[in-house]
Image 1 (tube, rainbow, N blue to C red):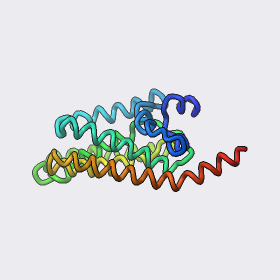
Image 2 (cartoon, one colour; image 1 turned 30 degrees about the vertical axis):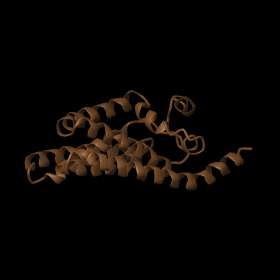
Image 3 (cartoon, one colour; image 1 turned 45 degrees about the vertical axis):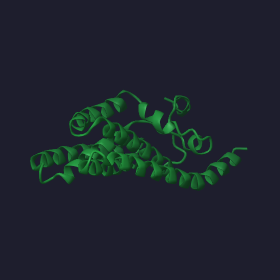
Image 4 (cartoon, rainbow, N blue to C red; image 1 turned 90 degrees about the horizontal axis):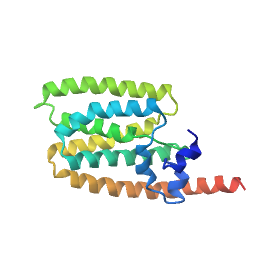
Length: 199
């Protein structure tokens, strides 16, 4: 698929988000994939972690952590790759991995057996994804890591109390607004200079 086609259907692209204010791309890009292998890998990962997530977290926490992790991954991706077109749900899925990790770490004494089993499986999947990220240049490791960290924070907070999800949402929304403002001031001069160079 060409970059132009991906842009037309909602992919992440720094200039479109920063200059044109098309923030919706941070969400739509999560529903786009670059081929059968890409969507198959993501859906397999989501199936693996999603079943556990549904049994450990309430619906609001699940959906919130998923989308916040995906959006955070998209913002970090723009920072690391300011002129690259990006698609995929990997940041969001890694957020779910992170949330489960946060939950298990907080309750590791009470969930000793689950902790050992989960961390073993989590380690294998994380290792495989990192290897794939190194082998295939198109895989955005920065989005994966950002999603993982943001999800882990959410999981650890919700592990204390389900009501903490609202504090998590508030903190993350404010943090992402501040980071977007930083991106705007940091990347706008770059994008303007690139645009001027084309004329």
